[in-house]
Image 1 (spheres, helix red, strand yellow):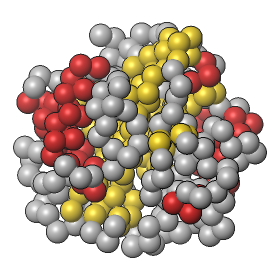
Image 2: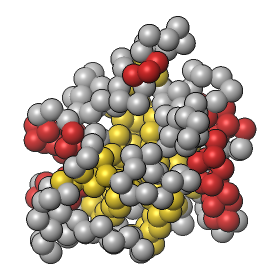
Image 3: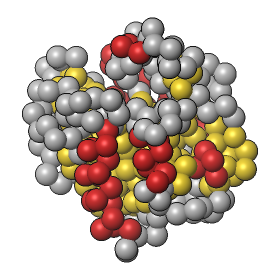
Length: 291
């Protein structure tokens, strides 16, 4: 099974159309079974999407923001489908981004159907207009009992919306699922660099989650962010700011065999399409869709 996570930055990226095509080209080569994306946005003023654009889409219960024609997930799924690769997919919006986007997250499943999906708030804030509002999105497919979540969390040092409080809400919800689920996968931008001791990364490990990077038989340097990006600019002159950070992770509720963990979309393994690089893992078991 191949799992991929990427904070896409999507419409906010310079040369967006070119990067969308590069993303699709790479997915066609790699063929991940599950794709988790964060910062998946759409223009708030764009026309509502028609049924043709919604092929393969599974609406998440309780979500009311309509999909629009320039939705990044919808456009990626459309292009993949046109080139012979069918993904089922779901998307939610969590908040207004940059004052003009519905910004959320998406999950894709290769050549399968979504059996269930859910979303819920992990931030204390519930204001859709506030940029610190955080949600997570999860899904289960027809051919697996596993649950897959796409995650974009806040910062450890944020006094208003600290990582620890968001993680506690998220982790408490997941405890209910652990009892009747084969495995739970948490994929995304945790804003928790593995280099920073005693913060978010260590908190997740302490709560019993397994970092698939550490489980992998073969792995690279793991760096998913280089330089100073949105949300980290206040650290740009700090002595504790490393040159590169491994802050995008794939965690599992179980200690599973992992063949490899590789950074992707970093200019070396695939083109750079975002201010984050992606993470691609290959597990030791069969793929979700038994291909």
